Length: 51
Image 1: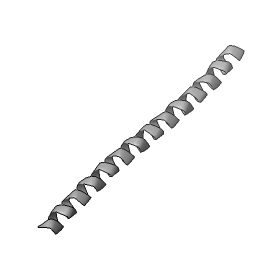
Image 2 (image 1 turned 90 degrees about the vertical axis):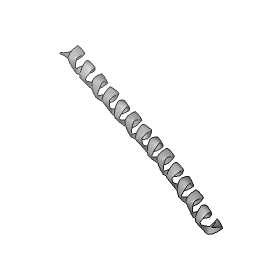
Image 3 (image 1 turned 180 degrees about the vertical axis):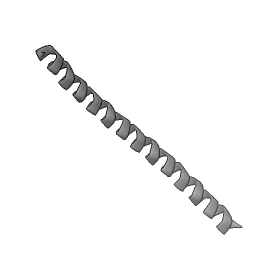
Image 4 (image 1 turned 60 degrees about the horizontal axis):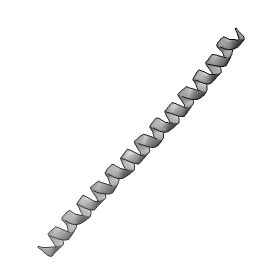
């Protein structure tokens, strides 16, 4: 029973670590995507003003 509880706490901490990594990964991907969208939008606005 002690080993099972130890495994459970270790599994919970592992799940928490994986969840944090997944959230960080999603935030990084979202920031990268929004950065490219902003670059494309500014590029299009420059093109429209040049015309």
